[in-house]
Length: 112
Length: 111
Image (cartoon, rainbow over all chains, first blue to last red; front, side, top):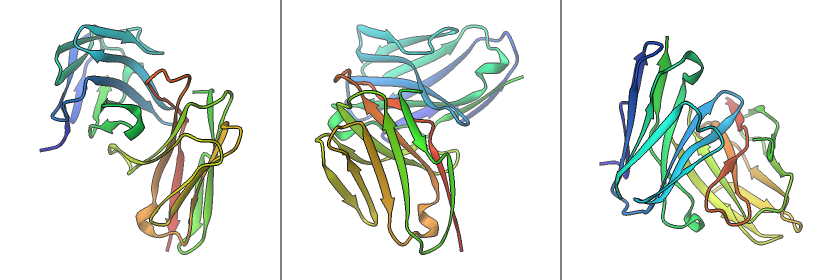
């Protein structure tokens, strides 16, 4: 099994629908992150969490919410999806940044 | 992020040639990270640089951080098709324990 698992891998949804992207990890790391990737823009941080009770907004949190259900699980929700939220979404974990992040394989989300 | 600028944005090289990708920061870096991404897939951690003047190598890939800790370069020697992908630099500013990424460099290797 992968260290960081994201589900679903691909999703097409309609404008206005609520959707949840899930991330689970077996690394035992406290720190978890959600990024989105758009062509030519690199990765941008949406939300991050340093432990179960600590949730922080990133640079582009508007339109998103998160839930840290356990140390191993960090979910990202789009309350009312819009087309410009079409992107590749990545979850990542870290123990300390000295070893960098471990990334999941990504969720490709299309909002039509 | 404009805090980190990568150049070039895309690069096409002949197999066997050397190449360099640059990552420039608008402020002093606490740590600089290089990742590789195969198209549409997750990111793989290559190496991390923290000290001014530091240089690290992984197989045929060498990364350096300048003395002022505001610019890093990634150099690939004798490129191979397996080097193709998107290379991203990420930075930890002020020890905030979260990474800001550059926009990425798309590398294509022609046979």
